[in-house]
Structures are given as C-alpha cells and as structure tokens.
Length: 276
Image (cartoon, rainbow, N blue to C red; front, side):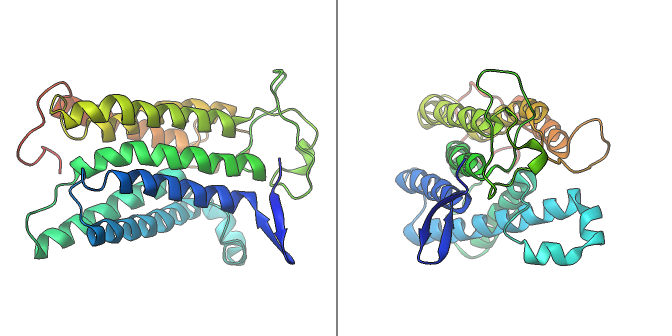
C-alpha cells in the first residue's frame, strides 16, 4: 500500500484523493459519451453533474455523522479538522437520488419537454460502479476500509506508517476487501453497460431495469463484503449487522420491489414510469 503517490514540492499527493478523482472522471466520461442517448444538452448535462456531486458529498458526510454520532458528540472538532475522511456510500447515494430529483423537478417547472427520471438514471447504473471501483483502489492504497485478518494466501500485509490502518494490525495478512469490492463493481458496471443497457435502448426492457438492477446487485455484493471488513463499522439500529448491511437490505428491497412492480422483459413504456 502506498498512501502517498509522490511529492509535489513539499506537498504530498495522496493516492486516495487521486483515485477518487479518477473515479469521478471515469464515471463522468462514460455519461458524457452517452449524453445524447440520455437526451441531454451540454448545459443540462453539467448542471446535473454538479447537482449530483453536491448531493453525494452532503449525503456521504451526513451518513458518517449518523453512524459515528457518539464520536461526534465526544469530539466535534475532530470532524472539522478531518473533513476529508469519513464518508458513507449509501447515504451519499441517497444524496445523489435526492439531488437528481430536485434537478428534474426544477427543470420540469420551467422547461419543456419534460425530463423523465429513469431513462438517464439507467446510464448511471453503469457509471456509478465504474467510478466506485476506481475509488476503492484509493482505499486500498490508503489502507482505509481494510479487511479482517486472514490465513488465505492472498492476504495483504501493511507496514506503511502513513496508512489508515491501526498499528495493531501492522504486519498481519488482511483480506484485500477493497480489491474484492473493486472487482465486484467492475463486473456490475460491465453487465449493466454491455448487457442491460442495449436491451433497454432496443425497447425490449423497461426503463429503470439497469438502475434498479445495479442497486440490487450492489446491495447483495456490499452485504457480503461487510463480513470481510475489519475497520470500525459504526452503529445503526443494532450491532447484529453493520450500518452498510442495513442499508444494503433496504436497497435490495427497494430495487427488488421496483423491478417486480415495473416489470423487466417488456417493451419500454412511452409515458411516465410507475415510480418517477
């Protein structure tokens, strides 16, 4: 693991920030390449991007405050001085959903033709896991979101003093859970981009199939990955499951319910979908 990629003068360039930025760029590039298929002009696209990034940042930090509220009450200044750390994916994802809905309603209030939610959201079903996969490489380089100790031959030992790993785990082989999740996200992204989206574009499957399919697949993967995590998972509802596992169960129920309600292998509807 290499928390610092290189020095730029006297300033270190951290691997985490670089990979997260590359993840955002990769997701945006995929969406930009499909902008016309999403039915968006240049300015519509970038207004949506800024809304979504803002929603993701606010949602991810709000989720961290929620699961680490005890730490926040004990030392609120820590959250101010360490604002770059502590992000919760699921709450950030909800933030993007809310931001996209606000964008849609604001656009539809002033412009025609009206924008629908699910047709462009399907493309995010491929872009989000692509960017997430690259961002997880930054977690691996930094040593955060680390795995439990393991006896498997592919266990990874960390000794870099600049990593986010507790010193008590230095030298112990750990599950490279960040790489597990990166690989899982890449598989989901490829399946959505090359298998589901073409069928939606051909009108064989309904709008929303890619979007809700991504949520369902990621929920199952994330629920499983949590069993291999060794970092502090915070508290939410109960200690039986981690906060991310509770979120994953909710995501799976939502996605499964919407796929069942809307149908999958049917012609894409000409009007508004049943949900958005």
